[in-house]
Image (tube, rainbow, N blue to C red):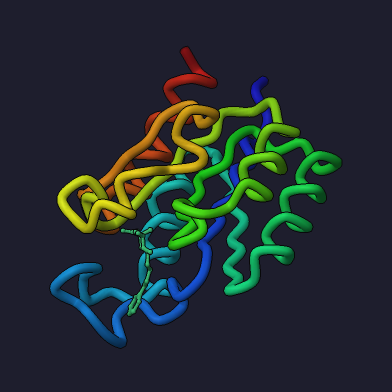
Length: 149
Ligand code: CA2
């Protein structure tokens, strides 16, 4: 019998402020509400989610190093602004061999030019951008599709 599927959800800088400002760009839901909705969808599918948010690049890199030991089945990551800047995040994710889905609430390609470049898009399994919090659900479905075939 197949065991539990373990998926780590990582959110980067400022995403703890969701629902508190700029709802026209990022939606009205808080990160806790988004996580709760994802958990509700994941549990009946035998998926255990772990959640991590940090405003600090090094803390996220450390977390990813820990996942190297913990052996997750998949990673859903919204790196926030680190998407566009962080070679350290890119290098850390390269340590992992499980599916990695990069997700953005907003469509980064419809926004300022500096958001059009992602440091991790070409090393991620895939990218989802512009579907609000539903993007996290799409990412979950994409990882399960890869694992279950
Ligand atoms: O669209 C996304 O999900 C982003 O990753 C969000 C980042 C942004 O830097 C990326 O270019 C695209 C910013 C997250 C900021 O979150 C806030 C939420 C509420 C209030 C203020 C900021």
